[in-house]
Each structure stands twice: as C-alpha cells, then as structure tokens.
Image 1 (cartoon, rainbow, N blue to C red):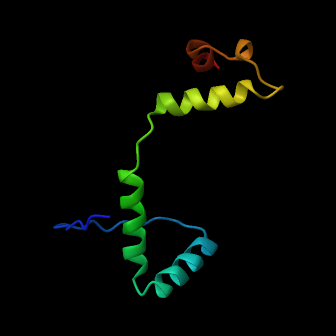
Image 2 (tube, rainbow, N blue to C red; image 1 turned 45 degrees about the horizontal axis):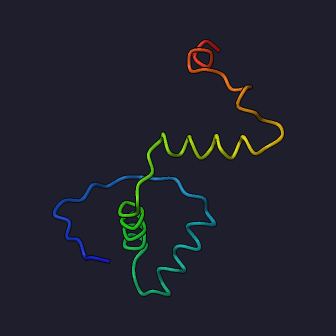
Length: 85
C-alpha cells in the first residue's frame, strides 16, 4: 500500500460500538500503532478499492430480492409510486 503524506488534518467525531473500539485498540496495540493510524489505514483501503455505484448496488440488491419467494419484480413500486407514499 502506498504511503500517503497528508498536509492538513481535520478533526472529526464518529460514534462506534464499544466492542468495535475495544477490538480496534487491541489490534492497534498488537501492530504497535495508534488507533488513529489504524482507522486511517482502513479508510484508505476502502477508498482505493473498486468503487461500486449506487446503480450497481441497487441492481445487485434487486437481483437478490428477486430470488426470494416473498418478493417479485412485479411487486416493486415505481419511483413515482414510492415518492407518493
């Protein structure tokens, strides 16, 4: 993974489940790094992965829903019907 240099930093607050933070702190300690560095590394990894568009995600979701007996394509609302509700 390439090393990126950041010239500016923005402080932000995020809410994470206690168990996730506990596990992340342990992982950071085992890797002899900081929680901040671990979070930054994880975000960088997600950002360089192949991005999936909302249209692609929706297509995959609808394809999976069509496989379920409770759902069918004919039961879907159109965009205007969904907005009307």
